[in-house]
Structure formats: structure tokens, C-alpha cells
Image (cartoon, rainbow, N blue to C red; front, side, top):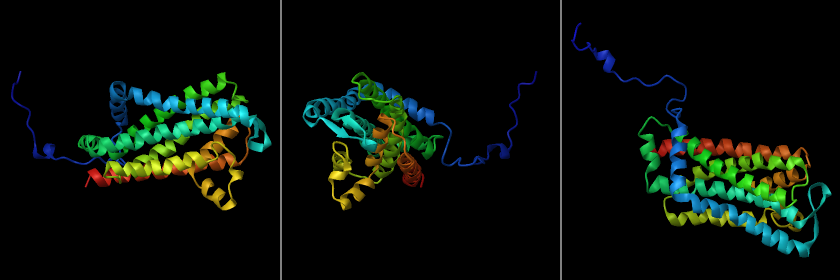
Length: 280
């Protein structure tokens, strides 16, 4: 038997780039980003995740049950009469999906990007910027799915879902979370200081209060109504409210289409920003 080492030619040592489409952007290993995120969540973020779920439940109990006993019956989509609790519960579910996605895609991402240098280290491996974007957005969606499922179960037991189509609020909440997470991560890539994160709250809080969450859009002047209808949360609130009572109209396609466009724009923005920041 021969024991001589195999002969290595110069051509065998030449590194060549992959000819696979989008190889520079996507390493087909987003699951490693997800696995790392799940391990980190188990050890450090569990209490924050619980608080994100409890907050809308407390709003529902205080505003829906407490204030609802004074307000009485209100007019829902298509003129359908409904209790005040049933009116605001779908809106709070949309808000819960938004808040969960925004937390994961802004504050969480800001720390990983600017202090832990996590994405920079990831991109030094075989991972591409699209792997990182998909992994982080998936984690935000998982959080939104958990919040939506838990909140929908509570709504069901409280008798606040008037139609079986109300179960579609769970995938709708994931769609809403997807839209906010993809845009949120892209915007966060432009932030350089902790203080700049306050700008996100400066936008989120008014959107939460004025997106027909607690009262109908018709209470505002017409000019203000147009502005509110341009905001993403209003589309999420309307979509949820219609699903909760099984009121299907063509306007639902507009609401869904709004978030589809938001997702495409957000994923494209996030991928390009990660590539520009770390793969110069």
C-alpha cells in the first residue's frame, strides 16, 4: 500500500465564488440565526416577552370591561352592533402584534448591531445579509404569533369573537407583525444612538391612540381621517375588526395588500442596509 501524500495542484488551491443565484446575499442558513435567537430568548428575554403579552390583556380588561360598561353598544364594521369590549379587542390584538414585532426588530436589533456586533460576526461566516434578515424577522414573527394566539384564546373565552372567521385573526396578526418587523429592522439600521430609539416611540404611541383603536374613525375631521388611513396600524385594526365578526368586503384585500407591500419594501431595505454596513 502506498503511503505518499496526495499530489495537490495549484488549481486546487484557487478559491472561486459560488455561481448560485443570490449567493452573495443568501447562504441558505437562516435557521442558524433562528436557533441562536431562541437560545438567547430562553436565557434573557422571557420576562420581557411575558410583559408584552400581559399589556394588551390589561388594556382589554380596563377599557373593554371597565369603560365598556359605561359606553354600552357601539357600531362595528358594516353597521353591526357590538359591545365595546368586542369592538376594541381586535384592535388591541393588532397593537399587540405590532408592539411585539417592533420590540424585536428595533431595540433588540439595535443592541445586536451596535454593541454586541452580532451581525458583523455573523456575516464574517458563510451567512449572507438575507440569512440574517430572515432569521431576525422570523423571531419577531414567532413572538407575534405567540401573542396573537394567547390573546385570541382569551377573546374566545370572553365571548368577544362573534364568528368562526375570527380565528383568522391569528394569521392576520402574523402578517401585521411581519410588516412592522421588516420595516422596523431596516429603519433601526440607520440609528446610531440609544436616544434615537425614542423617535420610534414618538411615532408608535400616537399611531396606537389614533388608529381607531378605541373609537371610530368618523370622530375625526376628514383631513385627519386621510392621514390616519395612511398609517399601517389602521389597516391592521380594520382587518382584525372585520375578521372578528366575519364581515368580508373587498376592502380587506386593500388592508392585506398594504402589509404585503410593506413586507417586500422592508425585507429589501433591511437586506441592502446589512450588505452596505458590513460587506463593504
